[in-house]
Image 1 (cartoon, rainbow, N blue to C red):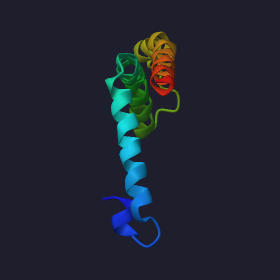
Image 2 (cartoon, rainbow, N blue to C red):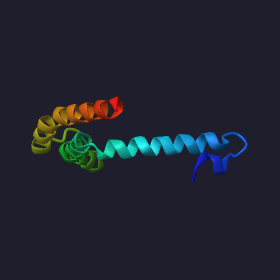
Image 3 (tube, rainbow, N blue to C red):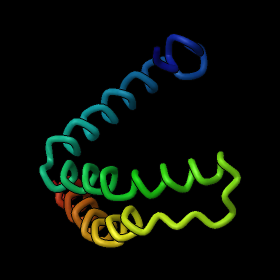
Length: 94
C-alpha cells in the first residue's frame, strides 16, 4: 500500500513515482554481489553474538561470555561492512 492510496490529496502521483524509484534502487542494490556478500556476512557473523547476548539478558546473566560468537563477529564484521560500503558506492555511481 502506497502513500498515494492512503493520502491521495497530499501525495498523489509523487508518492508512487518515489516508491518506484526506491524499488529500482533496492533492486539494483540486491543485484550487486558485494552488497549480498556483505549483508550475509554481517548477519551470519554478528547474529550469533546478538542472540547469545539476548539469551543472557533473558536469563538474567549480567556478564554473559559468548567467546565463540564474539570471535566470529570480530572476524566478519569489518570485512562485511567494507563489502557493503564498496557495493553501495558502486551501485550509486552508476
